[in-house]
Image (cartoon, rainbow, N blue to C red; front, side, top):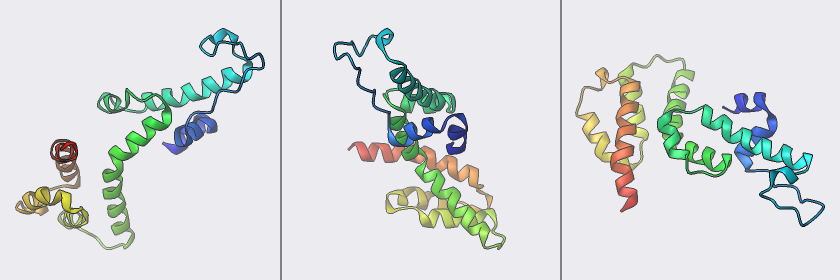
Length: 161
């Protein structure tokens, strides 16, 4: 996403990571900040970059992901929410990449076991259930789906209580 955003406009990536550019102050202080027709060229550029960042994120996600970020007012808020949502998935992908870097061939079952061992104790219930199955028949994508479903149902309920 970083490369895509920077290729689109480097300022857009900065807005996504750091937050909106502040609207430059208007020389005549009596100008209405809600009246876009009264904006200076510099103010219009800032508004445009801030909105480009939000638009880029909206267009880069699925409908399900949109529901998670639709209430966000800034691109940074949207990005932060998406980062939290996919933090676990990124961690699993990193584990697999690190294991592949050793040039040792791992079976699908070995990868699944390593991921399950890396999960925090809050996931223990799901780990026990999954370990009762034949892990050699469980693919990484199936595991990922199981973990996402568990996170959406069980972990969200636990966090809300």
